[in-house]
Image (cartoon, rainbow, N blue to C red; front, side):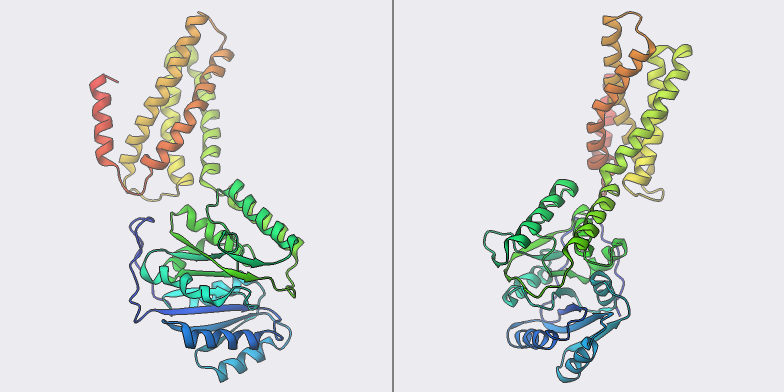
Length: 397
């Protein structure tokens, strides 16, 4: 039922607002063996939406492989309450349930909340409003804001804060609460992000948010009032292990990790070329030739693997910009080589190579910043490139 949209011109573009009079919000409640609490929660949610929610809405109970009477209870609710539907899925997994529901939806804004309704429903409108207005693309409830009011035991409090701190340390997360079961996303953004999300269980939320952050999506946070469900049946140990595996997977797929892998391969190629060319070209000539050859390969490899750019669009511009970055690296390594030969007129090749590799490593930070913010930036920097080329020409480089 969902319609495809044209790709965004840039991930930092402000999303177009949705007309409030026509906006439709779909709230998904994923459930697995929740026959005891489902009816009361859905009726409470339905009453809140009917009386206090200003947008068109529907509730979808996403039953994922329940073995009790959850499906029958949900079907009875759908028959009794207008705006309630059942999505019955044969496989277990909260992420799988959300993916299935959101993929089928034709709503403008897609939400989900845990069936226990631990989050106060007064936070629903503040969660959705920034997405309808075009201010943000995703919205999450956070229990870790100073203005949030949370009732839960110390064990869960420590686990939650530790997990979110781990996300900040390992993945550079800038959102405060990845695990709160109270989130919303614009449908057009969901259609772009969901194909990239691999997890089908509890790590689904975290992966979605990390991918959104990496693309520069605007994530809005809403402080919530939250009361812990003492009857929660989440297996903390197994969930934690799945989360750790997910973090490792996302870390391995991170742009910086791919950049470092390309850098290691480029350095090994540089070492081999330098040793082969040292005798016929001398140290300075071998350094320049090896750097020039590996610079082309490095730029192309980073284009393809680090920044996932396909096709020939701006290929020439990017390689020209990469050449300018090469000049900077050449200047640093040549300077280091000059200092070495000033101190020792006949250093061993091993020492020469050690100094050159060390200088190249020092240039790595500059290279990464240049690749990320200029060479492979989504919007061309043609004016900057022309100025840089002109400056190099004027100084005779």
